[in-house]
Length: 152
Image 1 (cartoon, rainbow, N blue to C red):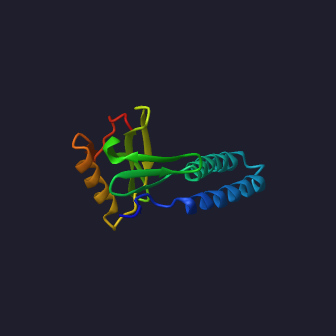
Image 2 (image 1 turned 180 degrees about the vertical axis):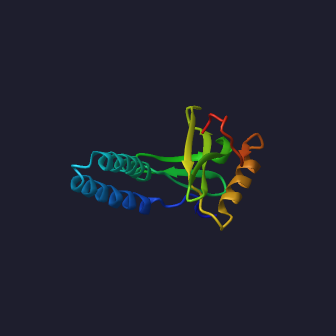
Image 3 (image 1 turned 135 degrees about the vertical axis):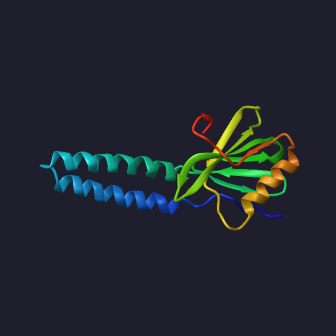
């Protein structure tokens, strides 16, 4: 089986946040005398910058029959599926779709995790969770979350 991608490509979000940030800077410069309006624009600018960096450093997650591959700007990791010990839905939503946290042990047995926004509608994420459960019967798959759950 070839590698199958389960995480969405969030690059478009990065460019959208960049455009919104530029628009906010222009809006702030045009409303310099209106302090109340400027504060709102600064807040939107701050949120846009944070979202830009979150999208910029998002990771790509792929899998095959035996491994999960996590790649990004500063990381390239190959994780055996048997070392994935938890897949959990978080409370964070983007466009009414939940982010998921995948926890695993690295080569030094240190706990690591990656958060992804899975692709929907193609069943790949469900196949990934089934494979993890097959390779590691002790793995926890939690498709729910609540406000008192501090492991987000």
